[in-house]
Length: 248
Image (cartoon, rainbow, N blue to C red):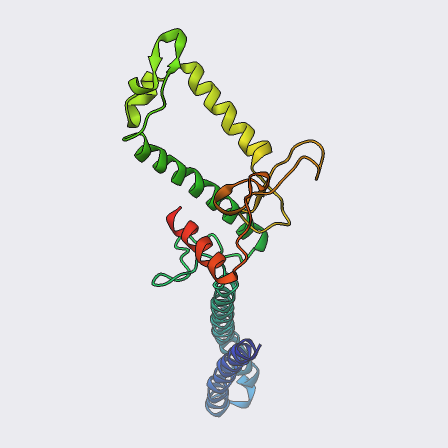
């Protein structure tokens, strides 16, 4: 509040100075006119003096307006810079803030400081990162290991016949891509559900039966019924979660 009050006070001082300067300029003209002209022409000289005073009035108004505009602009700039610093510091202690980059947001997605938007984008970041890591793992593994048998018995296409990389797009039948799309939709809607009250990335199932049939995932994505348990050590858990964000 102090910078704002100082700026407004400066604007008032500038306007007052401009008005007083115009008044002091007009007074010698009036005195000179009264000294030169006779008693009979005093009314005319007073009218001329009033005209010169009114002509100098716009200059004082312009000076006051310019001073006020500059003060308001200065207040807005100082307020905006302070707000940006506070917003950045609101998320600088979140997971993923690691040296040497630190808090990295070049696109300014967190500029508004909205906690809900940050939570939603963090969930999306984790989901996309996990899909990307699975894709990279599959790309590497199929260089050395292939499933036995046929990918499409009706088309006599074996798993060993599928090339690596983008060349597989043309080799896999359309029905295979449809099955893949349906499986991804089932995972996104029912098998990997993000409960809003859970931390970002802590997924559960969303099946019928509430808590009886639903379960959470433990370390490295193992379901609870297969022995998957969360990491209990806080430091180790933080390290693993930071590594997941960095790798994803």
